[in-house]
Length: 91
Image 1 (spheres, rainbow, N blue to C red):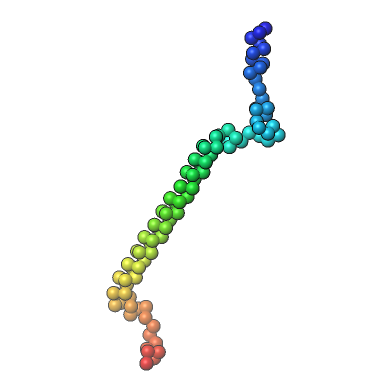
Image 2 (image 1 turned 180 degrees about the vertical axis):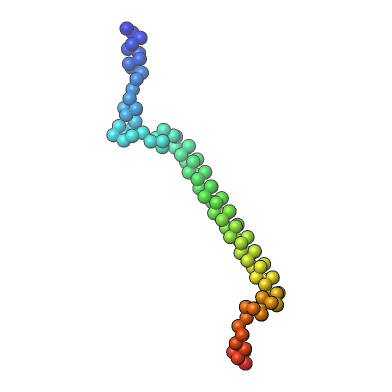
């Protein structure tokens, strides 16, 4: 009989252990404040890294576009085909 009482005393519903018994227990409640802060820092670091990668890709694309434009400016056929044929405006 004494063994049965110990088991009953250990069993405590989750609602009674929560700080606010009317709200469900969340992951934030279960994790320590330090862990939550660390996770937020990691999320910010990942966002910054992603932004750096996007900026790097944009700069590479811009450099490639400029290099291509310089090559086209040296190509006489390209310039001839893309110039306006209205020579009167240059008089």
